[in-house]
Length: 176
Image 1 (spheres, rainbow, N blue to C red):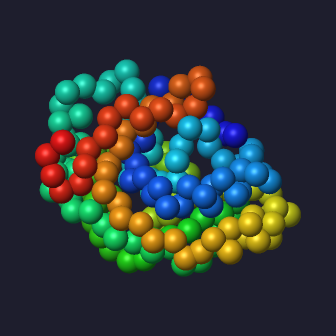
Image 2 (cartoon, helix red, strand yellow):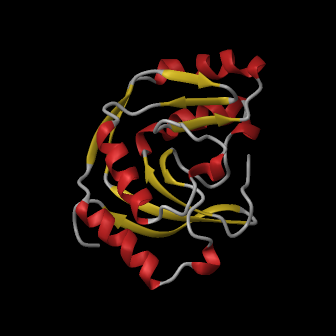
């Protein structure tokens, strides 16, 4: 399983209904799945470094979550883009609106460090998967689709030596 650099953070929307898809990928391709992270849509990565997280940042996240509403989504197809195997939410517009609110609040933070400048909203199922593995990953995942879920919380995760750990959670559309 992949582990990110220590002290990295990310804001995520967990997608619990897609966890079985990650498990299926990890069964055959464990190096392509990130340690400690459930299935999720990335709202902003990298986020504020863990050492710089303070009350103002956490309160701003809470306010954004309070203004958002839970988002019903479906994932109907597994897709491949370069070395990424993923599923995309339908509809994407409510997810993009929440992502836009976060990016507007922290415009200095470059999504994915600039590595994927035009990445659509997605749940990563496999990262850095060799092209020779793509067909097997799709074969493992396709029978489990479609998947439906309601995105109802914003989660701040921090990377450490043993993988990612949730630090804070904010329900969407209501006060925590």
